[in-house]
Length: 269
Image 1 (cartoon, rainbow, N blue to C red):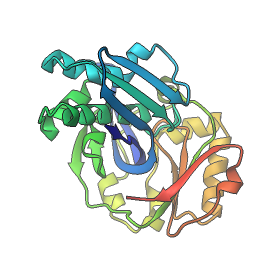
Image 2 (cartoon, rainbow, N blue to C red; image 1 turned 180 degrees about the vertical axis):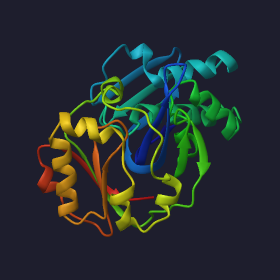
Image 3 (cartoon, rainbow, N blue to C red; image 1 turned 90 degrees about the vertical axis):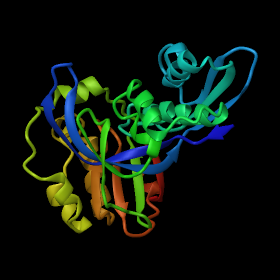
Image 4 (cartoon, one colour; image 1 turned 30 degrees about the vertical axis):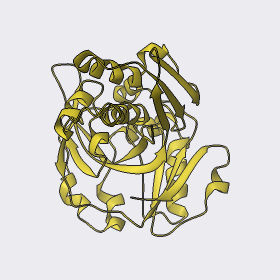
């Protein structure tokens, strides 16, 4: 069985306060995009995990896909299988690739073993794996809050618009990103701002991580400015960086402008 864990972007991202558990409360709009990894599982005599494509740092036994399998195995005594991940979404790029892999693993195993877990149950498992993993269970535009793992429905559709994602081959860790941001109460109501016409977003919807990271890495504001210069209706950094995206009314063939970077473009869902 095969599935395609996709990435997401943040439209607006406010870091609102530091929590007593060491995490941060935030608010954002998560929106799925089509840049995807490939995950396959097949029956096997013993469990194995392998990967290809982009090199994944760290111990493979601690990969989030493996942890997702182990979560369900502990509760349902799952038989062994062989799991392979083709890693395509850049790592440390603010697009939730690892979280998506984990969530899609849960969904895939739910189907593969006919566990009949509800959406709510899958989301609760996903929350144990990472703050934004649960988003990828339903994989639809949402307003998120608390640690980024609680969701409210939002009437936002960008279907038919096009997105260009530019990853400048720059890995930014979550710790590095948070070191440059000070939690504060937002001055703009994000839910209200998202209902405004998109050309107004550039003046009222921001990612709080941009201020510190843009000063540290000048390439980031350069890419954002170039996207606006090429006709983007809205452009921003996603997550804790370093990917910059631009949303366009129609397809824009701009890959040749960013030949030194990793680029993906496509129609929004």
